[in-house]
Length: 186
Image 1: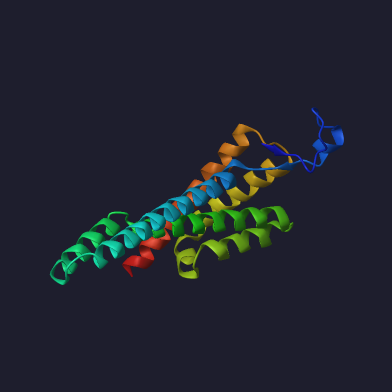
Image 2: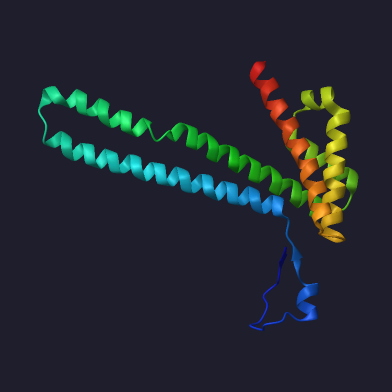
């Protein structure tokens, strides 16, 4: 997908506009959409919880003292049904995923030295103890991601190049999940 740099209002982009085009990658866009959707879901649930709070506060002013505990329990039950804690966790995971994908993309596109670029990505995504235990596999997937994304950005933004980047990133995410499970178990 191409994003044209400040094109004037013309039906057909000029050759110069195409040269100024920035290649965008679906993976990073999808991570952003995932974050936006999680944010909207949290916002919707928070608004619903606040509406319940307002409704029940109004009802509490009109109820007797011995009915207050029952009304509070009813309100809290309805508020808990919105699963705010799970939604906050989902939003946090989406934010972390977007941040990691963005950081990896930024490193690949801005750091020219391949070894330095690979090292920076590893340091952002993995803890030292995990890297010591899984060095070969981590190196393999990060190198594959790095090379695939450079190929995609600089040479060919084809569906095949996109799929290669996705496959590598999927393996990296699998390994970061393994790292998180190991840390939780420790």
